Structures are given as C-alpha cells and as structure tokens.
Length: 188
Image (cartoon, rainbow, N blue to C red; front, side, top):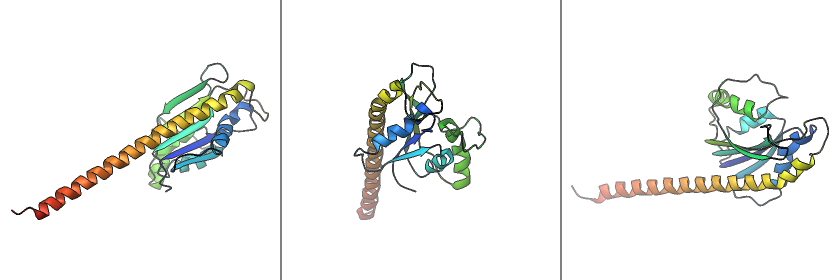
C-alpha cells in the first residue's frame, strides 16, 4: 500500500496515433511539482497492472486516455467513472482500456483484499485518428495542455478533500480522547 491519496495514470498505445494522448499528458505532468501523495504513472497498455495499482490504497484515481464520445477531435471530457462493474470483462492484456480495468476492480479486490478508490475520474480527449503511427494529431496535441490543467484541478480537489477528511478524523479522535479523559477525572 502506497498511502498516497491520488493516482494519475496515463493509458494508451503510443503506436496508434491519438491513443497516445494519455501517455503524453502524464509525461508532461511528471515534469511538474505536484503535492505530496500524488503518484503519476504511465501505464500505457498495461491494463492489468493499472487494475492492481488501483487497489493500492488510493482515495482518488484520475485516468487519462483517448475517449471516443462523438465530439470534434481534441474535445476534452471529464467523466466520473463508476468503480462497480456491470459485468466482468474477459482478460485481454492488449485491450484493457479504463472501462475494462474498472470492470475488474471488484473481482480483484475480493481476491486480494485491496480496496478500489472511492472516486475514479477519466480525463479523456476525442481522437482524430487511432491508426498505426507515432505522434498525436494536431487537435489532440493542442488539447494536451488543457488536459494537464484539468488533471491538476482534479488533483487539487482530491488533495483538499483528503486533507479535510484527515482533519475531521483528527478532530473526532481528539474529542473522543478529551471525553474519555473527562470521564476518568470527574468524580461520581
């Protein structure tokens, strides 16, 4: 268990054009100063690895990937993903996108005792081309900076929430200790 509250994972295949969007976005993020407790990883096409990482104690996961939703190429999306599977997908190490990874979480959690993140976000970009070739199309390359900002905002929100929860837990613990101490010192 890492103890980190946030995992940012770039997903995609750099050999399939705009499918490399997530990998490029986390490459840029990894060069920035991020808050303590934020892990940025390039998982590429290693979906099973991502599934197991998601069980490492993260409160929030931000997955970055090319996402076909019908908008113009380069359109950015922020999607709150459900961590509960509707059906368990077949394991295919070459086709494990975020949807398949999230579909496996409950099964893997049951087998490992790990716990999936309470919140999973997907920062996606509408691709122009997923054909063989290295490099992003012009509209997708232009969207990477916006995606970096979107991820940073999500990370800041997740860190604030984690800090607030920790402060609330500490206050509750201090109140309980104070009440216990008062019971011990108050005569009957």
